[in-house]
Amino acid sequence: MNLQVNAGIQNIFNAYQNDFDKGPDRDSGYIYGPSLPRSFFAGVKISY
Image (tube, rainbow, N blue to C red):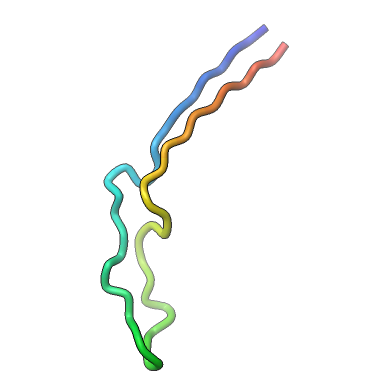
């Protein structure tokens, strides 16, 4: 039987875009950087 444990952080520095264009003439292609805030995850895998 094997046990695997894992954990991690996505977007560790919590970077995000804070200058979104607004209004009817905004540029829909002006998006950069992560789209989600910092998140933590953990998992366990058991195989036999």
